[in-house]
Amino acid sequence: MSMYTSEPKAPSALPGTAGSPGDEPSMASLLSGIVGDVQRLLKQHIELLREEVREDVRKAKRGAVAFAGALLLALVAAAFVLTALVGLLAWAVPAVPWWGWAGILGLVFAAIAFALIQAGKKSISTIGVEETRKEIREDIQWLKK
Image (cartoon, rainbow, N blue to C red; front, side, top):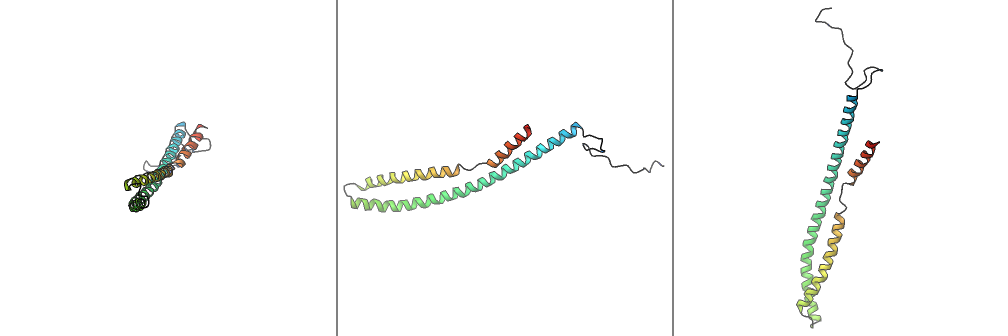
C-alpha cells in the first residue's frame, strides 16, 4: 500500500453511543444527555409559559376594551337618565330639593358601580398560567424519582 491510499475505515461510533454490543456509554455522555433533555424540557416550559401569557394578555386586552367602552357609554347614559330622574323626582316630591334627589341617586349609582367593579375584579382574577405550573410540578416529581 502506498502512503496516499488507505483502506476504508469502519464508521466510528458517535460519542456516548455504543459502537459494539459490548461498549457502554460513558458517564460524561450520559450526563450530557440528561442535561440536554433537561434544557429541552425547560425550553418547552418557557415556550408554554410564553404562549399562556400571550393568551392571557389577549384576554385582558379584550376585557379592558369592553370595560372602557361600557364605562364611557354608561357615564353618558347615566348623566342623561339622572338628569331626567332628578327633575321628575323634584317635580313629584317638592318637599325634597333637586340637589337632595341628585345626592340620593348619586349614592344609588355609586353602589351599583361598586358591585360592577367587584364583578370585573373577579373575572380578571381567573387569568393565570396554571397549565405551566402543573407541567413543571409533574416534571419536578418525575426528576425526584
